[in-house]
Image (cartoon, rainbow, N blue to C red; front, side, top):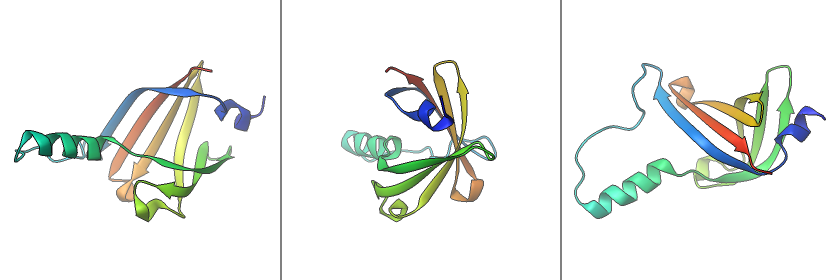
Length: 112
């Protein structure tokens, strides 16, 4: 099975960790104006969506997402690089965002 084939299939997110370089959470803590605002802000800061083709750079252990459409308009037409590691039926993707100051780690489990 090729490395590209290992990415194919259905995956379920089982863990998500996000940290600034200094180890602090990347989103500021503070007060909100209302319960509705909390829900909207929480949804906005905890949801991301993009789609497009991908390719694998085995030498760098990276998967490159060629973003065709994104919830973040400035990502459309860009390449998003993620370090990857397979372990059993799990796939861990690590993204360094905002010039490397934010590190996101997503652990996916194969479901099909």
